[in-house]
Image (cartoon, rainbow, N blue to C red; front, side):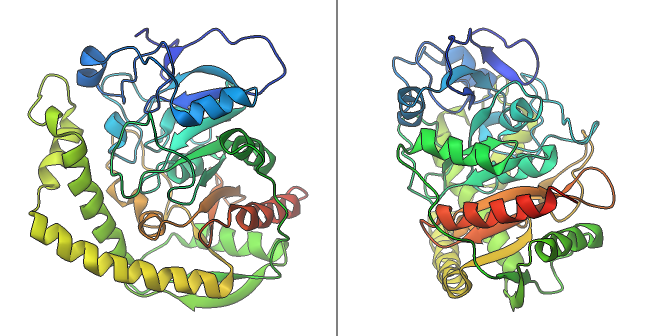
Length: 376
């Protein structure tokens, strides 16, 4: 393993000459000839050089993508701030002094800084959408199971996904074309999207809420509101299940005080529940997820913010940051985070959600909004 030139990268490569896009790969994903560190000292020390690319990286190379290096991340992808005790914290170009978001922090920073055209990230509870929102870029969480996970370090296998980040919706289309050869957007955007409304337990910064509504109005996509109940409980349930699976995936690291950061060790401790308790939570969570999928299918596309408030400053806790993303992951649905203008910096982020396998509809809708906002 060789350290990257700054906190955006863990391992930096010489980029081959050619016309293909420059691609950053989250260091949770195997790239031949490099150690996959998962952003963790213990893994980096014990890891072996990857003998082959992960399946998604093989696809990227086959389509002409040029791999620039392995991007930094929140340790073991088990966190939302992007702060890393071993490899440093990538900068947030959109909001200096505030966290870049996690866990795909280096991936978002790489495209925001122009150091990569496209970045690959992973999203289990919001780990593409959250850093996209923090850094003012576009990020796509794909439908669960759509992109193969062979060669990707597991966090919570029931929810792990791979997807692209870029500075524009066109970049996301290009990224999906790399990950899924032949991918095209043939769907037309809907005439309106449903705006999710929450119960009183979900508090959203009114500046962000207004920015989302204004963006939809500019794109002439304002539709009927739809109430989704028990959203906070769904968020907490998904966090419980992610923690339960993360303990299993990383059991060999438990108790390694020298190679696992304090924040991650604490999350492991907080995640310990019995198998019976996990089954009960999963049963309740799956019932909610089924109801949510039905709502999305009924309306086609639904809209909500990506983050409930401004990213926290570096050093502040950010446990709330997956509040609006984790329930979407619980349902396995595709979602895109799109920056939209707000009354203050940084930009707000609009999250669009579509039905299973409807990335084309999702991207078409995002493109319509992006075009409408280009003249604002």
